[in-house]
Amino acid sequence: MERLTRAEEEVMQVLWRIGPAFAKDIRQAMPKPRPAITTVSTIVRILEAKGFVDHEVLGRSHRYTARVHKADYAHRSARRLLKDYFAGSPQALVSSFIERADIDARELEALLALLKQQRKR
Image: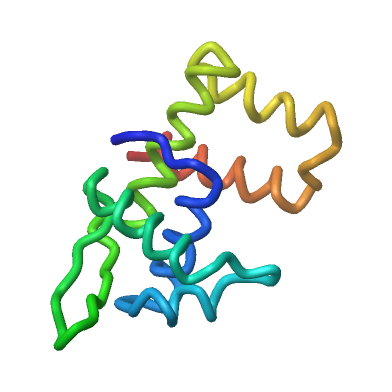
């Protein structure tokens, strides 16, 4: 799965949030300042070429649908982050958050509970 640019990810976030949509609807759902409609159309066509988006023709318009699920892209992005910045080590990633105090005690407890649950399997 290819990496997406920031603009491509922004369009995908909209499609994941609102579901199938026309380019004008995607643009309207984007945060301000919104790109031009031609820019959104170009990004959607690039996403389609990359296999992230599909379209159906309705009259003279195209309605776009995400082909890649958000959870699948998130998982692959997290794996890439681990590989590229933490030598493939989940421990190094979590340690980084703990050392910078980006994770609180409640979140640590939840992580411990997940680890215990995994251990039981």
